[in-house]
Each structure stands twice: as C-alpha cells, then as structure tokens.
Image (cartoon, rainbow, N blue to C red; front, side, top):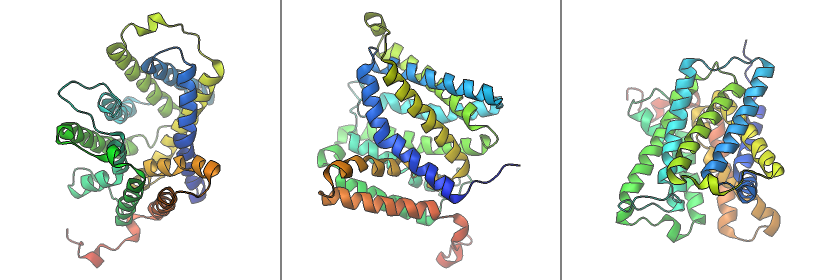
Length: 313
C-alpha cells in the first residue's frame, strides 16, 4: 500500500528542487560547460546519459520495476515538447525568416504554465482541476518577476510574433504533457522514470548535436574534468528524482509553480552577497514566495463554485 507523504515532506522537496534548479544548477552548469572540451549539445548529451545510467544502476540495485510500454509513451510525451523548445529558444540559431524572442519574454511564458493548465481545463480539453487561488497566485507572481526585467528583455517586435506564437503553443504543450503523463506514471518508480527520461534527453541532445554541431567533436578531446562532471551528474540525478516525485505527489496546479520558485531561489545568492539593496528584487522575492505558498496550499476541493455562480458551467 502506497503511503501518502506528509505536507511538510512535499514542501521541503519543492524548496530543495527550486534551489537545485535555480542557483545551484546555474553555478554547476557554468562550471561544467567551462570544464568540458565538447560543444554544448554534446556536453548535455554526455551529462544526461551518465545521469540516466547512474539512476538505471540505482534502480537495478533496488530491483525497481522498469517502465512499461505505456509509461515509456508517457515519458516520450513529456520530453517531446521540451526538446521542441530547444531550437526556438532565445539563444538558438533560427532561420532568417524567424526572429527569436527575448529571454525575458521566454521566461514570462514559462511562468504562465498554471494559466495554460487552467485554459486546457476551461476548454474541456483535459480533465484537470486548477484552483482559482493558484491562477491568481500565478498572475501575481508573473507580475512580480516582470518588475525585475528590463524593457529590452520583454519587448516584442512584430517580426517576432511568429516565434512568440510558436513558443506559446509549445508552452501549452509542455503543460499539457504534465497533465497527460501524471496519471500514467503514478505506478512507475521514481528512479526508473527519471533514468528513462534522462536517456531520452541524451538522445534528443545528440540529435541536436549532429544537426547544429556536425563533426565538431572530432576537433576536441574527450577528456573532461571529473569533478565538474560529478557535480553536474549529482545535480541532474537529485533534481530529476525530485521532479518526478513531486509530479506524483503534488497537485498539478502547485507543480506548475516550479518555475516561479526557481526564479525566487535564483535571487537568494544576491541577498547573501549584497543584502537588501534593490527594492524591485526584494519585492519580487517576497511576492513570489507568498504566491508560491498560496498555490501550494490551494486545493480545488476547498473552493465553492456556487459562490461564483459556476455550478452549472
């Protein structure tokens, strides 16, 4: 019989994942890429493959059940929109007819995941429930992050509208993939699921390496600093285990607030080194933390549709 984890344990895992995916991942990834002699996509493929292999060995030692075919299909649905975002991101090399959006705009679109889930629910495309408090918290959190962004990072020229629409649709697809995969991976153990996901990620990065960096691995050595690789490996293993564990144990609305939590956690090193100095950053951090706390405690059962006249809608 599966034991439901306590709220405190779930909240702690959520905070740890935010710190790992925010400031820790930034520091470790910068160190890893600077120490790796390989181009970026090859480096990502090596790190993902190594992390997937490590998790696969852990799963084998624990004798965890490997994912079934239906669970593999759910994992493919999870990874597909994420990989599709890579060629159209703000730092990607796009065709001459497609003008990429700024990193600030891409960030705001990723923060809107709870809104995309609410849209899918309202349109009856997916049978999911997103509390209204979570939607309100997401809007407030997006506004808080917007305070910290420069005008140049969020400005959208009319030539960028096709790329904006493409990123918007892929963002909705990412949110929909969570809703699709969550019930199908409920019986799958965390370590095998994370190992399979990282293996699929490695295959995707390798394809991008062949397309965007053909033959570049031949001109570089394969010697990589062990400490940097181990740090990246540990970050990936722990982060993705927590990611899949939270996917199973958090409500979908609260799970979709992870990107806002990552942004809030990214501000922590600035407070540690510079203290409370910039009111925009300080306000964004406080507002984001409040919004995340509201979303984590919100449940659809705690709301009353009759109060808004939505009983028959």
